[in-house]
Length: 258
Image 1 (tube, rainbow, N blue to C red):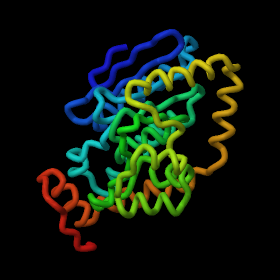
Image 2: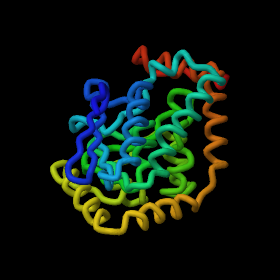
Image 3: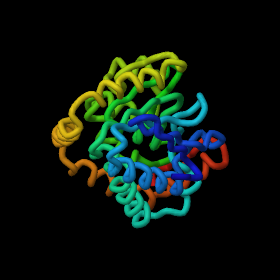
Image 4: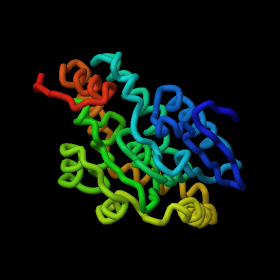
């Protein structure tokens, strides 16, 4: 299967997906999200694939966020619809998949990039990586599951601190707070992911699928619906327009609470 924005290569029973937009720090534009949806759907239906490892091209970024340029044309209605579609076709698809997905975080995992990693079942990060949800600097909130999955992983207090300050944390801090499973040197990132995946592939596939489903049932979808609604509302604010404009113009935003 050939894509323009991602690479997909099967080795044995493992499918390797690489987000291949290195010049854009592997940002998630609509085309990339669509390709991820197609690739994951196909992989989950393929009996020859037992598990998936996803990473980013290069050593600088796993995914540095969403493609902010695409946000400038959205309003409440279109942003809400987009968030719902991306939830269903990408992030929820990954989290609820019948096969294990490991995120090998090779660099910056910010905004939608961290949300993508959190949708995966296991996260391993290079010791040089930094993680965060900077959406409030754009007058937004995380809209692809970030408010919910981060809270489940690190607890309410740390989640609110990360989201409200927009500060990045180091790989070691992420490990300390339970956001990632392991921190390793860059050269050991994929080998560590492969080692864990190979262990999982020795187990009963139906039991693995059942375990994923059972663990995911520990939280409801109400929070995600609230996030989608609030994410969409942000697009009708002057602050959001100012935040996106400032980002694209490479200047500091001047928010007015409007």
